[in-house]
Image (cartoon, rainbow, N blue to C red; front, side, top):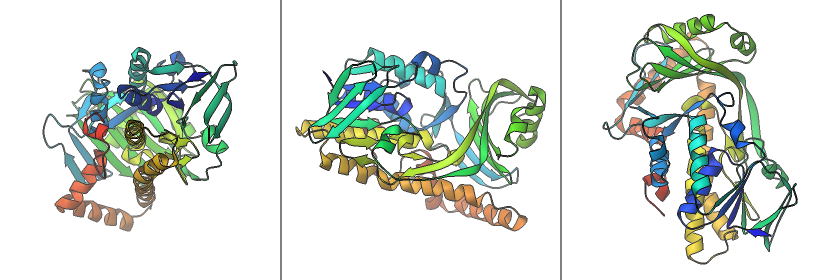
Length: 402
């Protein structure tokens, strides 16, 4: 039977980041995932790009991942939040040129880089594709039998399989969940004018419309929330018609628009696990929480989970504790449960607030954004949230080793 310090079910962005963080600090992780890694990094698999918050990027720097993305990520210098194309709104500016608000990176490329780093690491074992057929968690430890007959054991199991986590379901952890009446259309576009490293969040009555800067400076990722009933019609538009619709919602301020790749459509939903731990089990990322992309915090929330869990386990190992010890897991639960709940509640509240139709609601929203723009401490708090720097930060999110 093969042994590891931690068995991670799920080799996505959060699971691989956690494995690398553990490896960097002397702990061995086995990552099990049924998906073929070659298929996951194919261009047709995932067209999304993610704004990696500045705190998350510091963790990638500490883990040696950022160096592998040198010249490929687009720094976000400014974030503009407005009601449609109305004047005013909130403007967040980076404090200096060397400290952007975030870095835009293609999910596919980030997945490639994390996979390469994991394969080259000393203590990460990737079993991909492989499927767990039987899992036992008890006082003696965790035992996992794969469907090909291999068996492994560890003190702790981590569920990182995503929104439909079978590990979470098998543990009987209750989940609050609902669907939003929206789908997200994701597409990359080229435009005439330079985006000036600015991200835009425009709130329309039918849903938020995000413009996220990418390299080169005349390319952006679009995340467009449309009513679910309209999503098939938008998805089937010819390229020129789709580009015209996008350009219209941009107000033409970036010039003429052309599509730079295929488009993807994703249903939008919310879920939040009642707890993030069980006996010898910790949940991270979408296995524990899934939120609306309105504030671009989904992946960053999962990376915060990975940083906190890595610190809890590394510090526990140095004290000679069993990594599945209930006290260690309780510390992780306390550290992450409030932050994940507050971010989930805030994004859900924003989604509902900006979904209220009518001129009166629009006027109230514009008034609220004007107050945030004028009140320095309040604006600073919003900026800290956007950068992933609020609350008690794990050492990795400060760019430090544990």
